[in-house]
Each structure stands twice: as C-alpha cells, then as structure tokens.
Image 1 (tube, rainbow, N blue to C red):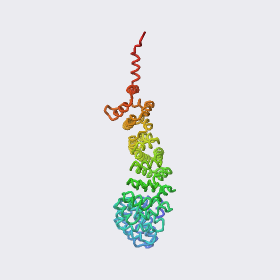
Image 2 (image 1 turned 45 degrees about the horizontal axis):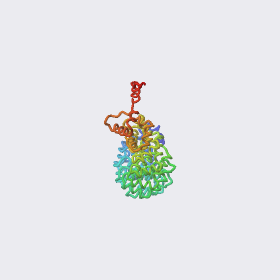
Image 3 (image 1 turned 180 degrees about the vertical axis):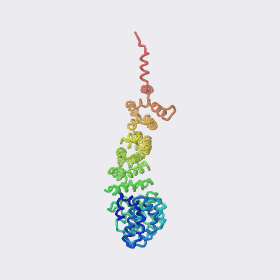
Image 4 (image 1 turned 90 degrees about the vertical axis):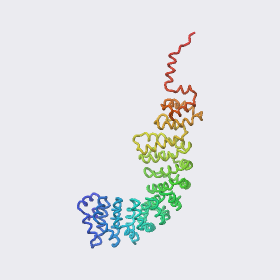
Length: 487
C-alpha cells in the first residue's frame, strides 16, 4: 500500500509525517520475500522524491541492511535495493558518499555480473548516479572495478541495459582526463562508435554524449575518438528526428573541433561544418547552441577555417540566430561566433558586415534588457569586426548611433580607408559623413582626435571648414559686414 501511495507526489508529505520510514525498515527483514521487495520499492520511491527523505533513509540506518541483502537475496529484491541506493545517491555528493561509506560499491559491482539483465541495469544505474557528482566519487566507482564490467554491459543485447551502462560510463568519464582515460583504456570507444547508427534514439543520445565527455578533455582523447572513424557516420545524426540526438551530435563535433586547427580542418573536410549549419537551420533554442559554438571554435583557429565557415553560408545562419532567438545566452554565443569569423581580415569582416549584423550587435550591446554576458560578447564582437572592416557602407550608420567607446573604432577605420580611395572620399562628403565627423567632440591629443585629423587631411581645407559646425553662421556674419561696391 505504501509503495503504491509513494508513486504520487501529493501523498509524500502525509507518509513522511506518519513516520513511514521507521515502519518500513523492519519490513526489509520480513520472512516473506514479496514484503521485503515491496518495502524496498516503497523506500526507493520515497527517497527518490526529495533529499530530505533520502537523508532519512541514511539516518534510519537502512543502507547497511540493503547492502547486506543485495548480496544475499533474489533478483527482484536486488533490483529494488539497487533502486533505493540510486534514489538516495542521486540527490547530492554527501548522500552518494554515504552509500560509498557503507560499502555498497563492491556489492553493486558484483550485481553487474548477475545473469539477470534487470539486476545489471539497476546496479549500473546506481553506479552512474554516484559517479555523476564529482571526480572523487567517480574514482571510487572506478576503484571498485566497475568500468570493465560496464563495458561488457554495453555489449549485451538488451537496449535498456546498453543505455544505462553507456550513461554510467559517460558519468565516470566527464570529470577529468584521467577518469576519461580509464574508460578509454577499457576499450569503450570502438563499441560506442559502432552504436552511433543504432536505431534507438535514446541509446544514440547516450552514445554521443559519452563520446563528447571523452573527447572534451584533451587533444589525445579527441584524436582517439576521431580515429574510431566516427566521421562521416556521426553527421547522419545531425539530421535525426530526435532533437537531443542532433544536439548531442553537435556537442560531440564541437568538443573535437575546439582543441586544434588540425582537428577542425578534419571536420571541415568531412563536411561537418556544412552539416552543422544545416542542422542549426532546422532547429530552435538550446538544440542550436552547440552548433553555434562549434562555428565559433572553428573560425577562431585560423583565417582559412573562418573562411570555410563563410563559404558554407554560416554567417547568414548565425545572424538569424542573433535576431530571432529569444534567449540571451544563445544570442551571446552567436555574437561570439560572428566576432571570431569577422576578426581575421577585411574580407572576413565584410562577409559579416553585409548581412547587416553590426547594427543588431550594436542594439544588443546598447539595450538595457540584454544580460551582462550578451552585452560583453556583443561589444567584443563589434570591436573585432570593426577593426578589420573596410566596407564603408556598413560603417557609416555607426557614425550616428555608436557610443564613444565604439565610435573611435569606426572613425579609425575611415581614417585608414579614405586616404587611399578617392571614390570613397567623395561619397563620404555627399552622404553627410564628413559633416558628422566635424560634429564629434574629441579630447585634444586623443586617439579619436588623431583619427579625425587624418580624415580631415584627406580633403581641401575649405571643404572641411564648410562642413564644420557654425560655418554658415560665420558666412552670414560676413554678409552682414560686407559693404557692396557702388559705382
């Protein structure tokens, strides 16, 4: 009855107040096996609900009893007991540590060798939840000998067991290069690579995630993942129906690309950048995020790699994310990526500027509603792109809208381009740019004043005077004081 009631959240508090923990503990030792199992199931459901109840399981001295029974009892009880351990361990590192302290790991590892796939699954799940918290707990799971047995579990036919075992290995590998190496040394990469094309979406998610958790730590580990020939196979996952398969595939490619230009180049050569850009176009929100970041990492490595992103039509796609995504952190990632694409040469900057991205970045930087991170990333992107941008039509609007700290970069670009381009000089006068520059108030001797001087030096003195504020007043005064010549 308690196990049944514990499935509904609204009953939990009532059960807790009724002192149900103390009542369930003796039932774990009942002579009737089904009562033992159901009592364990009830405890698991309660502990799963929140950390207070999980804490009560630890304080009620129930864990040693469970661990003892895990080794002795039948498969139904083992599954229920492992469920309680998982339910307690998932909430916090402290509660997971309590499970380690009562000697549960060795028994859970023995359960990984059970003939019943359900027992293996329950044990793998509990071990994964313990390892998830931090490197110390993960190391404890490794030291108990779990890794080789989890690798055997991923080779079992049952999909559910494969999923949980892959997930547990992923949770062990994520904390440090050393832990990831331990998982790799057990031969896991080859098995994972073979499962990328498994039709089960949930398994694919876990496989891609585990490969990402391995590849993220170091160049060596990323290279080992690549050597398992995951390209071009992994690119098919970017077209998957399942959104999280797409996201995890993008994350995996990002974690490989970020390390070195060579790894990024390999991804470009495999068609990975173009495939990720298509993927960004086919989804929305957080699913796009790893793909957006991938483009930034690739472009940051070198001019050629940034050009590869431009040629694959990455810039319009990022501009779209910048203007249509509601979430600030996604806009910030797009701004960051665009900054890395545009910062290399005038050609790169122009590719970004022609998509009308600069005014969008400026308004995000100026908006009081933007998060601090978005403002910082937008400002940095504007600066990076402006310092290379010689495409004047994109710069001109900035003369009117930009705040002083950005205006100086804009004027600086004009001061570089105008001396060498007579057509641009003429256009600068007729479009009102020169007049605008005369209205800028710069500190004498400042960099901005130097830029203004070098722009003014491109023109005859009387033109500069003509466009200076107050010049028409001076002319009118001359009219007033002018004595006409009389015959």
